[in-house]
Image (cartoon, rainbow, N blue to C red; front, side, top):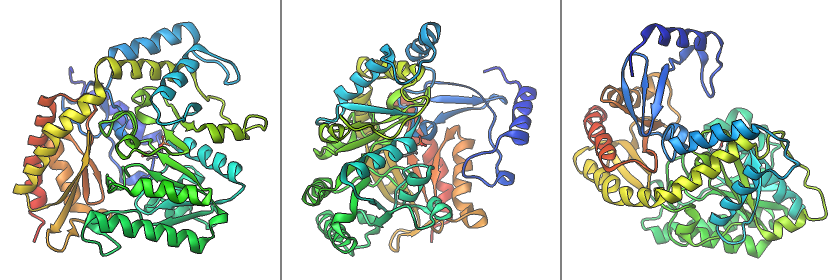
Length: 449
Ligand code: PLP
């Protein structure tokens, strides 16, 4: 933690000269130079320490630098740093076995990728080949990744620039009572109307043209909208009726984030394909994948699967997964996410909502929460307009700066802040973050009317 501003300045200068950053206007960003990280915290070269309520990009489910996972990566590097995907390799076999032991139903075969977008690409490829159909239905208010198929399935503004109309993606509205497009006033109404809307969409698109429905079990970046009871089961039934492959994207919601190993467990639903990444090894080494049902795996028993990656099931990434899943079991990380979520985060956020007029909605589960910030609670007008940038987004930027000033690194997307600390966050850390949020929200309150 010894400050070293000169080193920080050099790191920053090389970054600004040569690193081209994701999703950004390169001239408008000011990335923080990070000196180190441990557990739920990271620090800069100036000596400022931050409590990370973002888990990176919602991936450090066991925090930074867990010694057992670091050691497992070191040991794997010492014995077999890499090996080509066509061979049976201990770290890969064991990672697949452990993941399959946790995935719901008969999702027992694992195709490894380097991250979430590639998992979506390959899940859609499997669904198309399995059904012989092309179209894929996905929800507005969703994020599925930055590659061509994944970004076209995405239901947020990041799709717009890459959407040339040829991807086969068709969007529909999933349930979201707080901003219901169905004029619903209860979860039951929202659920029933969202299912009817999906059935109507399928009827008018042509059921026999649809390969898959892809949904985040709990949409993450788009706002952490836990689906109403019965919705995902309803989607499962619709898929079965029409021979459509049901893909659940658990890249963000999986591996403990919602207080269960997989979010699908909350809804007692088993998809045909499930994508994962991020928390599978706490993001220590890039890894993602698709968990595949028996029926879809069978399609590729005697027929080659036309997809692959040089680093599919990379031993370093797989060793990190084995160690992470072992640590999660030993240290009851999933139970901790459920427990701290229910006993500290949820009551804490509801208490903040009682005192801060800028909080329009509190929603989530486990270690997966969103605060929707609004100008006016009655009208629910967002604190900043949808997709606002620059001056229009200033109130959220001011809120973010207020958090950071108090040692809290917040996750901010449009008019929301997401409370997504590591799943092994302690009670004291959770309370520290809530106290910082409490102070920072007074800044957001100034923009309410
Ligand atoms: N799917 C979901 C639900 C995600 O949240 C993300 C990333 O945030 C992705 C897919 C894409 O994953 P990656 O960035 O590893 O390609």
